[in-house]
Length: 224
Length: 283
Image (tube, rainbow over all chains, first blue to last red):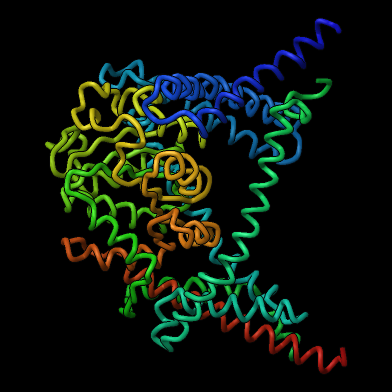
């Protein structure tokens, strides 16, 4: 067994197994306010230590990706320029604010410059983009909701009933719309979603077990 | 002609949506808002809490969902304050923390956090912890050990200096956990990490698209209440009105009503055109 294989495969697998096994033990067997549970809590709290460098790696990757597009004048390069400028701008106002005031010494959001930028630019842009959905959904519903098959007809009728029942005008036209909508959400929707959720949960448990015992190694990257 | 009906220019549709959604914002119709059972369950659970209970509000959404979730998030905080409950505000989404600040300023005034109730274990006491990183794992860690997960509030004050936080060490200390949810992590993860292991009552106010997924947890008793999108927020506002809250969603609900009706009308027109052209073509 080569040293590379030990470092790239077996040590990460061992770490995964130990951490995963301890977390599962904690969930099912360690009671709240016991020493064992507190120890696992500290282990979980270390996720902050992992998340912080991950955020930094995210920024570096983002800049590298868009920097490459920009340098080659690739497809959509003006948008890449905007991304890079926005990242740089946000970083600079953070550094400037941290250096210019003693009160807000933590590089966190209540920093007034961050807050101003968030409240006056980001929040409005994000909300405006999401609001465009109203137009797209109206157009898509008109084009896609066609009675091509029996299933499509059922979807059309049910969708219309839910839309009417969820808005006050439906109840104003006929109170029955609200009752029907309520039943549709509580019974068929819940039954369908419960089946999906149980299926997803079984799949997730299976995947987690495979990762825990080292059968599934895709997360370690190629060659592991 | 039937093909024309079936293929109305989308720009006409956009203009009609714009007009019908905008008009009620200036000239509200005032349609009555019936309160659903899920909203009543949410409201009644908060009403039944002992006065000194701690309520954790989690702002797990971004400005994209602000129109739907911010009104209920503000009304919920107002409800808790009015009942003399203690509120602790967190966010497992980075964009959620500033929205929690906005809600707190709306309810406690622009001077927030420099208000008498901040950090104190008194009626209406409040602490704003802010963003907790780590997504679902961060939520699990927060439930296990609040102080070890994040030892300071949003403004850099250590928990030891905030008397209210002396009562908030693990999920067992939470009266209820309320998640304003637009995705993951959200109320579903709170059910997994707080309701399951600690028996914490979890409630949610969620965007309309998140509701179908949350419904099974409500009917299973894992969520004590559900505010369903803008309509749920509007219903909840009408209940909190009794404490002096000024409803903000009457006009937007009228706009939503007209928007829904317009979509249904166009779906009907589109289908008439579709069926007629099919019959004419013999298909």
